[in-house]
Length: 116
Length: 112
Image (tube, rainbow over all chains, first blue to last red):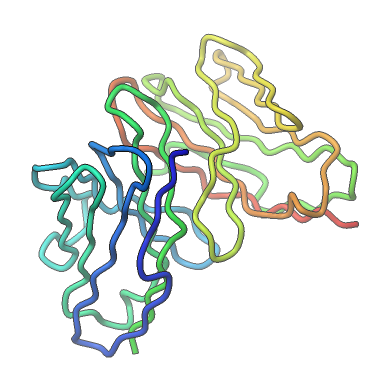
């Protein structure tokens, strides 16, 4: 149980285009989802916390107009990278909490974004 | 500001050895300490987690030792195998919070 999926697993796009990444909790309802970015050989950096039905809370330094997050249902959150540039190339990972009062976060397999 | 410091950055052991990865934290509001394992190109997977009210927790070959007074915790991998070669991250979460603060990661290599 507690499986989180992401789609796509890899995406290559041209500079200036927008890319949408989906994060789904497959066998549980996730009231809270998180989006992370990870550069090679570095740790995970939290970008934003997403609660179902409300606006995402962004970490300091993360541009909310560039990284649009939507958590429209208890099983789906999306991250849209708008007007992507090469410096946005990274590994994007989502995670989800099984329930509001639980500790455990389960991570998705990640999405490798390459912006040419 | 890095609130969870992890060491070493990399670690090489022989098969059967017991690698130990250490983490130290500053904020006494942290009350949940998980360890994650990440293989290249994959998302992190939860290995084991501990709360400050216990000093040790064991799950299979993985053991967390926790020293509340020193604000340190460590991961021990018993009888390590080449398949354990991965990057390991410690993390911490504050009471009543949701966000995890991650350590810098340790790249473990277990040689056959």
